[in-house]
Length: 284
Ligand code: ZN
Image 1 (cartoon, rainbow, N blue to C red):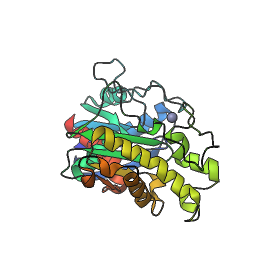
Image 2: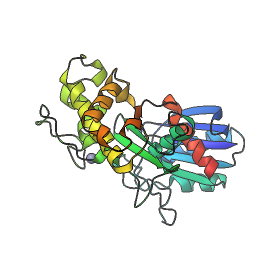
Image 3: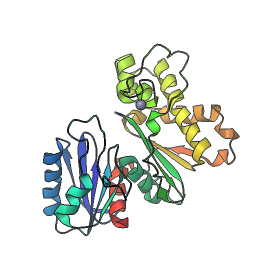
Image 4: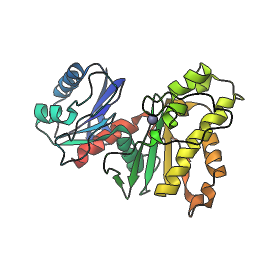
């Protein structure tokens, strides 16, 4: 039996499965401080019988370098108490099983590529637009790591001509993509979530314009076949269509193979993250 943890900033989703797609039991706990949260997760797994491997798809930033002493740790996060938390080490010690570890969005990208919207593709990017903006990328079937992991939410888009005054809310860069187009950035400018603003409100055009700068950059840099756009903000009616349209206007149709790029909604819905965690357990 495989164990999986989708570790998010507000909740942990826990699951056990006989395979990554055959979930036997699932449970959610709120994300409190690390000691309480990890202990609660450990107790739940103990109640499910014995697991042979555990996969963790975590919020970041995280250390993914297997030769680093900090592998499996959350590194420097603004989330109180979680900086330098040894997530993988805690569960390795408690259960004595192999641990798979990656970012939540790389996990989701892997799941969508193997079992969701990208089934049959060898490259896929998964972007979540919600409290923050993050992205994972699978190329030739494997999640992309390197010096660290992709931080797609922190690219610097060209400002929209009707959005030159707002400072942006990213604590590190102010007006990076996350600082301009995440859920809290939308609320900070217009006082409501995008789905609550009228359909003819300029916010829809502005946000689609920013997100399309990420999708077209991804196509230009990685030639990924599929881009999956998920997260709470993407549930806004017609936003996916607007981003697709704007990506095409920005010139994606020019790129070789442009016609075969697809920008789509998650095929696994809200199960992408936990399925990714079970896939990480399976490869561990
Ligand atoms: Zn930023």
